[in-house]
Image 1 (cartoon, helix red, strand yellow):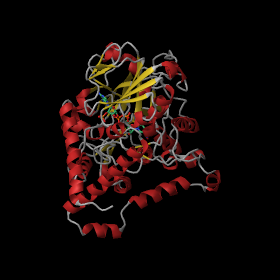
Image 2: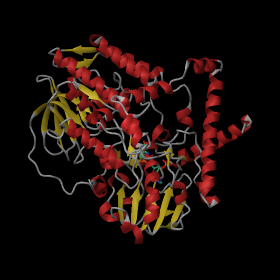
Image 3: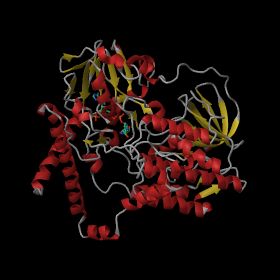
Length: 567
Ligand code: NDP
């Protein structure tokens, strides 16, 4: 149906009202959360997947390549390093196995909604075809372990260990890494592979520590308490705070198994259809070697605008382009609203579940059972209308004088966004802390190298392109890093370091491709726009497109001395 512009303008106004309401209700921005799980919050950092911390002597040795973190970043880069003949590779990981995000997040319903044939990496090398169009978390975790086995990464790996400092020793030309287990490890090359959403966060809710019932964060799911199939919840009153991508996947199972479920919503997510199916075995057996690379390249090519589309777009003014984009975005969101009306029986609940913001202001979600879960008589939506839960007492949360009496409270409140791709203290040449270097803005080449930090590589941080899908992006970074390390070794150099000039060029390149619209400020607050806080233009992703990002990295490798200093 075609609408007048006034229809779109009115909806945009409502989006702005809802954003303003939320900004007013939480002026603290990102400070409304904490990831400091010390003191009474300590239990929320503990690993429910390991029975105990395995005792061991401190390690004092030297390896060639050390990864901080054991998720996809480390696994994908290691695979390429192995192919380049590098033997001495160590993963240091906080969890008790590899997998990163997929190690920690094992809540019921956990799955990835990027198509599995694109998301699961190294399918050709592992001769594996995913079981479904969208992989379940368990399959992804198993795939991570299979990569670690195939490339012999368990041999030197150190688990249940967190790196706390990484210091460049100029005399020895190695990095020295200290851990929370008293280790002093040395490594020639260090790769920060710690992910960007790896620290769970809790809202700073008054009285949170006084809750007398059981509680955990979704990334630390306690199956001892809930039962493997949540069967222990049949006689329990359960509450869950948050309705982001994690909660959307966990809530259907909680709704089925809990005696009573209270869902504390601050802002609803957009929920579209999840078009899932079992992999067709005939199709799987027809796949030719190299099929995943061909498939990914095709998808990236198709995502690019054709010459005809570009010509068409050039006809419009910038203002008109933005207007057309916003209108089709609103059309999508209104389709999401209609879907809610069709799925949810109670019109008041349906209304409360409608998201009032542009598509992609928050992480879009896909689920076929989430909305219908609200039709269950034991499921209660507590719509806090942008306010959120602000107080918890012994029995449970309080909202507008109503006290909820819960046995279990689950925090689905997300993760701290690590903008820089680093978590520990990194001290480079001349004793400069990388955080101090970044204090006036992130400075990198490709989001990977930073001048003054030889042989250090950062994965998944800002100033890199995050288009297509994360594992593809990490693989391209891993390929680049493996090439850099191989070039350094093969030419008998000790170090590789980005030149200051190359770094300045890249920062400018990032700035040039940043926001042509006020989209970030127009969005309702959330972790995508740092809860409405203003960001420096360089402190963000490279928005020039994945193909341009790859081309730039490739060009830099063709003429290494232009971008890097070797010594
Ligand atoms: P999010 O940060 O996306 O969601 C946190 C939720 O907690 C939001 O609904 C937020 O509300 C709510 N919240 C925070 N404080 C309060 C409060 N005081 N009272 C009530 N509600 C509160 O975290 P998730 O763990 O859901 O997702 C993190 C990311 O992980 C996703 O964006 C996605 O990238 C990834 N992921 C991907 C999945 C997939 O592939 N399907 C599945 C799961 C996660 P508000 O919106 O108002 O801030």
